[in-house]
Length: 215
Image 1 (cartoon, rainbow, N blue to C red):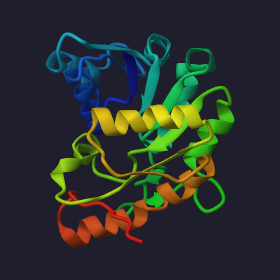
Image 2 (cartoon, one colour; image 1 turned 30 degrees about the vertical axis):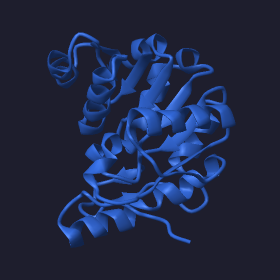
Image 3 (cartoon, rainbow, N blue to C red; image 1 turned 180 degrees about the vertical axis):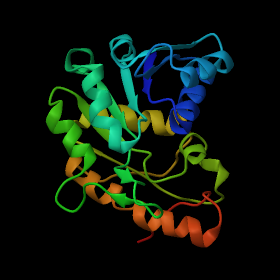
Image 4 (tube, one colour; image 1 turned 90 degrees about the horizontal axis):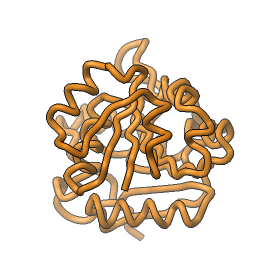
């Protein structure tokens, strides 16, 4: 499958590398096709890895992963272009975290809106599925790093898109516990997990933890 990973930070690198290892053709999208961080990733990720600007990556792909920093996601997706994204599944991994005032960061949007919803409103023809934003980068693609049962959430408006993303979570990344929370408005709750996640990270001294829902 042809997959775009928008963003060249640690999340984009980790997800992009995993997808290449699984045998997919991956193009990492950045502001520029000559981005140094993206080119460095390409040099280590193997023959299936390529780089381009946001527009080229989105046009290349069958599925798009938004791994950009939340504060820059809307700009990055606008640079990718609605035509290149039209009708495609967009797996939104981003969080609207603002570190400009130091640590801990704050959410730039919450309660009555979310970044996931903003993306869906701005690109109505795109099938936005929010997931993977509630765990550390390495847990995203290897949940077995945490012993025992723990859960991954997802939400979105398109049922077929969510089913396909759930197959990706289970079959490609190894998630056995996936909870579909419903439509894209549930991205509010998923993004609002981040303030407590940051504080748990500080308390536990490790990012290798997650939530398990018991009833």
